[in-house]
Image (cartoon, rainbow, N blue to C red; front, side):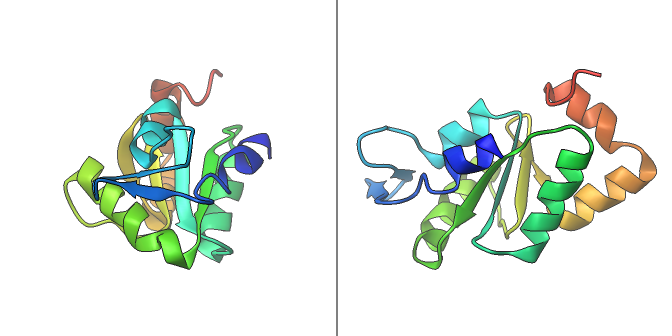
Amino acid sequence: MAARSRLHNFLEGAVNDGGRRLVTNGSGTSVTKLVLENAVIVFGRRGCCMCHVVNRLLLGLGVNPAVCEVDEGKEEAVLNELSIINSGGIQFPAVFVGGKLFGGLDRIMSTHITGELVPILKEAGALWL
């Protein structure tokens, strides 16, 4: 849960930096930087049950994903920045693995069921087993 408490409120007081990046006041941390610095990060709406399921599945596999819960007021700015990273449309929950968009709940579940998820997480450095 340490990663969750570290990130879930990072957008408090965030401002748009030239309309391109969402940056927190004083820290210089942007959504892009968070994606690149974390092996696995989950972006979702605050209180979203699908985000909770993704987080619980990853925790069950031994991954401690960073979780960013986005308030309604910041949702558009975060989605815009995530779209710039991915060059396309993004919807919540959005899971980034190794700095790249992996997908949402459906992709996490399908790769877990087929046994492909653990090797992907190991390659990204999220698992060491």
